[in-house]
Image 1 (cartoon, rainbow, N blue to C red):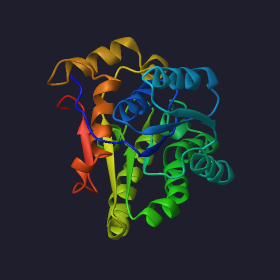
Image 2: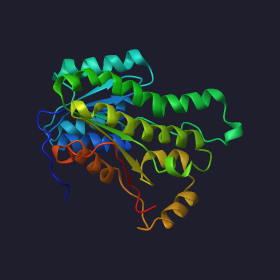
Image 3: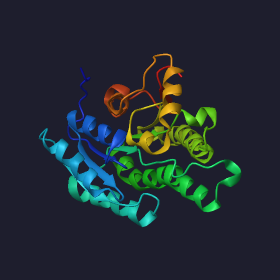
Image 4: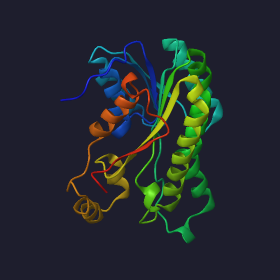
Length: 252
């Protein structure tokens, strides 16, 4: 049974909240009472489905298209959130992807830039954009999506992705130090193998099974398990937790 937290009257932005962990996080936040902005880039149908699922629970949600690697789009995302709901309390920096698997010496510079922009620059831009409202409220929750890859360096052609996620971990800790005076907490969630469409695109089935077999709990995680951790970190119960990178990886 899912835990219950009081997020009533809170407003959350979840980037990349069409499928996978983003959708599960948005639903968990909404189930606990938050109004949720579903950010998406291209997959309008998936974003609309996330909104539908939340509205079926009689909770508030809207979908807003924005490229979180473009400053003007990110600023518009924040402003439209405030236009819709009057405030911003929670930011879940979920948007990210491996983009393209390639050995380091074969990775084109433009692909490296794209990976860094999507996984790291987006966190920088979205966090900057919401801070004026969180500071004005003297309260906020920022939750970044990292990865187990950040600690082992990435394998199978995902080194640039791993490097970006390692930088997210450092950014998380530094921001927590800077923003604590404003009662804004900043934490990162670091999933291991989670069964999402990500692995359909980037993991060979036999390799995925090898990693699951090497996981102490002998299974993959679910988006809903990650979402419950995100909902906890967004709550008042987690108010004294900041600057942490919390693994959710079955013991790997």
